[in-house]
Image (tube, rainbow, N blue to C red; front, top):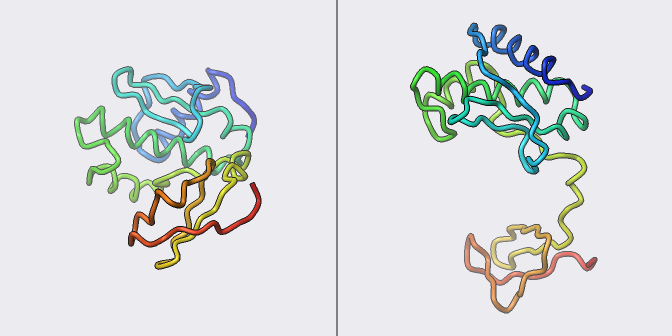
Length: 154
């Protein structure tokens, strides 16, 4: 899916809202180029859906529709005065009813981000980190076991 202009983005969000929720989307959807780790977000104070333009260029239409449906779940529950946050029961039920994803996929361009991999000697839990970890100072967060460097690059 290519990057849509403002008007097209709002039309797509409105169409998805009618199709999956049976309710119109009256507010605005915009691109936010500062979003880094998420596909989109709903801002309750402004009643705005913000989309990450990188997701539009790197993913297919199905993933984008999933992100929009997820944000519309926040939007419609907020408008109705119901629980619209991730932990709320109303939100989880609406996600299930509309087939919306709980989380979006990570961007393919950030998959090789982690340079260091550590493994717990005791439970085997894997930790991936961008920065090095001081093995004398840190332990496993699951079982307090000793961490060892799992890869030798970096």
